[in-house]
Image (tube, rainbow, N blue to C red; front, side):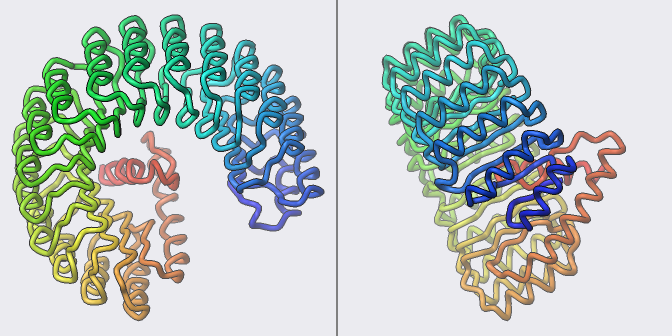
Length: 525
């Protein structure tokens, strides 16, 4: 069972004592209630996940209580404390408990004002702890010294498989120490170093490690001031590395020349499956060379080219590639200059493409004509499951075209048309088709200047549709119907699991689209 402290306090404590809870989101705000909660948690054997995300709730004293729980409790496996600013002293207390705790596998300490002293304590605990596999201390200030201490611990630790140090003000020398640790470490598979000023020199150190390292499969170097030279160092090293499958180089000022280097890499590489290149100033020419390279690449499944100033010319090149490429399943093109012409090229290409399942075109200046083109291919397409058209200009007529397409389409499960000025007329068309469509599971239609009376019509359509488990038009009355639909889907999910299907848990925002898509495919089998 999963609950939050929005419910009656005494009931929560009773359920903890009876070992009826597995997940708990939030804790009591008053100190007396918190102490009672801690005492119940010490004896509890059912709780697996504890999430404390209320801003400023856990101070130094509360962190000490949590640390005390960890010394006694041997059932909790995941602890998330974010936005509490408990600082170094709180981190030191909990880190001390990690030296004796043997059950915790996931620990998140994001945005807690942890500095070098807190990082040192965490590093010392990692030298002896053997249960922790996922550690997230993003958005703190561990600086170079903290990174050095954690790097030293990684040379000794053999349990951590995922480490998140995003936004920690780690400069080149701290990154260099972490890179050295990668040469010795044999368990770390995910490393997130985004939004740290590592520069091209830091990229060079990471590149040297990648030539030797084999366990690492996920690397995030977003907004690290790598530039074209730093990107080149990483990509050159990957020619000798066959283990890395996901690379994030978002917002690194790689430029058009850097795009050409990426293109050369893509033609040769056969191990990378996901590449994130958002906001790197590629322009049309950069997009074209990457598009050409995708004609030869047969392993890349996810590509993010969002925010790269790509106009119709570049979009056309990518569309042409989609008619030939059969490996790409997810394509992010939002915040570019697609417009109606670009939408037409993509729509025509997707009539011939049988692999793409997710397309993100939000903020792409697509109007009514572009929506008509997209609707045309949706009537025929049997592959696409997720389409994001958020913040375009499709209007009421564009919404009508999409609604008509949804009457024919049997595969689209997630659709976002928020912020498109569809108004009442467009919303009514959507409401009408919801009574017929049985493939959509998530529909986001908010920020469209829809009158309350029309929102009620959407409510009625939702009431009649037992497949939608998420719809957002900004109307509170939808909640009861969504709850009913979620319960129905949960029952179907349970039935499928009993038949042997391996299904994801639904409801976690970052995994929603992926989970819904897998759920739908299984339901159709």
